[in-house]
Image (cartoon, rainbow, N blue to C red; front, top):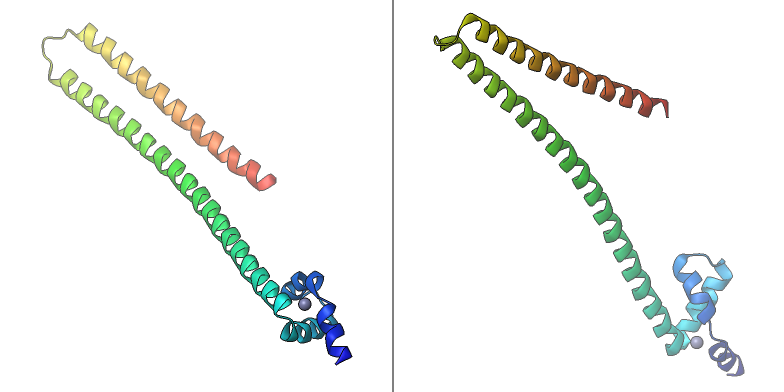
Length: 150
Ligand SMILES: [Zn+2]
């Protein structure tokens, strides 16, 4: 009887979090298990700790999931908008150039000098566009190379 009283008085509060985390020795684990079987106070404390740990673990997991999701979303959005941007830009220029060339070819009111002038302007624009595009492709390639090197 005296031994039983001593077991209940000697609470295991400081061992409970180690017990949940699995950091205790076999002897300590047994002490916690036996004590909680006899002491409702420590038993409910153990339950509270378990619920708390579970909630913390869950919120950490969902936060982590949200971060990954947000990162991937951002990455995809950036790639997609960049792709759409380039597509619209190139598409728009091709349509304008096509329309310009069409108008240019069927227009009979223009003199040869004016036609040559417009041809020079269109040719110049085209050359500029190609050189900008080429520059970007080279930059992208060297970026990839840098990534690999790091
Ligand atoms: Zn106790």
